[in-house]
Image 1 (spheres, rainbow, N blue to C red):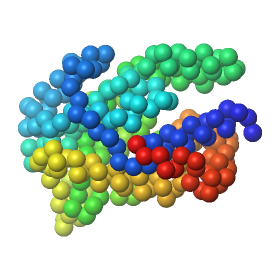
Image 2: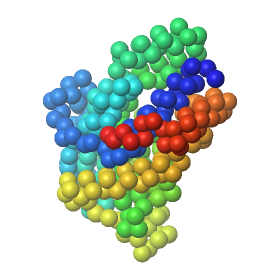
Image 3: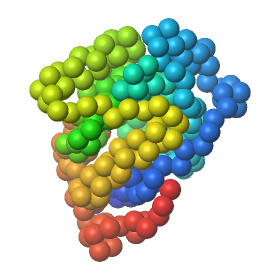
Image 4: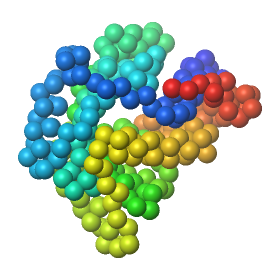
Length: 266
């Protein structure tokens, strides 16, 4: 077992436990504290959605993401808006790289002989990504989500969360239209189901807690990560995914099935 496989397994376990070991810490965000981002896109997103009847609810920063010691993502915040009927929440956020960490990762990879995968990761991560998500909660406890945050689709989800991911760069108009189509199709197939409405910041907070609880429970049930998740994360390299998965299982087994950091709360 190489040190790189062991380190990858440790990093994945720690990352999953930070992300899915408890509730997220949502901090109210002031856009003036995020001048390293292109705020024009946030304002355009808000203006375009207000023209469609959406209403701005809240801007938040996720502390676990900003404070993660392994993230390559610069501090960012999420702008949340709700549709006029209260049935859909729209989110916008930017994924901008932390250049210092990204360059150090590149240099370490080249030093360790990873001449192909490390430069590919560097180039994929270098460009700022503009992410738009649409989320609706249903009266039966299920969620429908539609997003252009493509890499988020690498992780499997519980059956109660019906998600569809489009490539980065897909227009918010395309994503929004697709979300409406999917909602209409769901309600046509289940006429007794209704949307669970969001009217206030508290409604939004409670909805976010419920979907987070479903994700946390699913991650705990699969012991943080599946081999299929790892295959998608490793860009279809099944041998690497299998090796990392086996090492994750070994490390979790050595710690009673939970891992040494299982009690860490965000």
